Length: 164
Image (cartoon, rainbow, N blue to C red):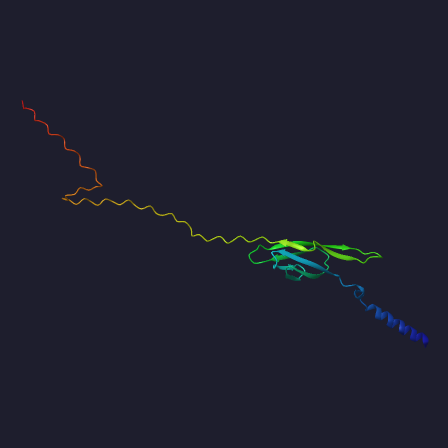
């Protein structure tokens, strides 16, 4: 009878081990504090990992396996992005593993946006004005037309030659 109880206990123990996940022994990735700064201050900063804040500030992000970016936006300034590298230092028997970011603090100098150019209407060349046509001179007017050429001079009278 003891043999039956021992086999039943061993079977139950092995069945319980098959449902245990080894993930419970993995530690959660460490969080990394990243300082975010901008000039001028007050920009909205957002990491590609999700967390963000208004500069100057610090955010806590889970240590990623790859580099990430931080984007900065502020009214009347051009948006800017900065890549951030993740540096993992393995631990040994005397020191624990560590994760840091490069650069830290993440600093960006925002450039002012160019003022909008005034909208100009398209230039249309002015049509040349046609020269004013001279009004026909009134017949019999005692005043000569100032725009007309003077009348040709009459040839001087010649003496008639005697007839032969």
